[in-house]
Image (cartoon, rainbow, N blue to C red; front, side, top):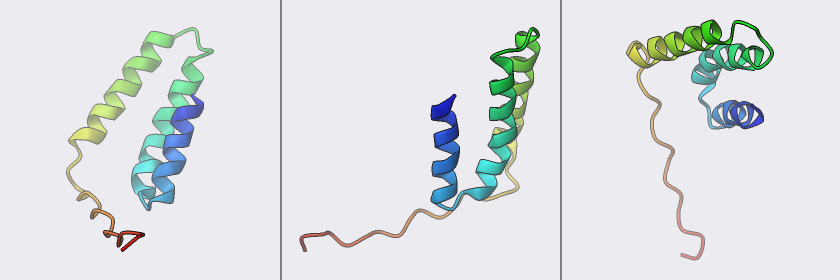
Length: 73
């Protein structure tokens, strides 16, 4: 779970705040699933949310990061 939270933080540090904010509730549901008795339903809901996020074409992908000059050049 900590790796997933690190991934969300990494998304924020590279400017993908919108994607991180959309993934955060899914990550929270998965965290809650670790101690829940209805694990199957929580996982099903998380998968449905991820599929909806993958189908959402309303926001264009972010531009690629600018290329940096080589250090030794």
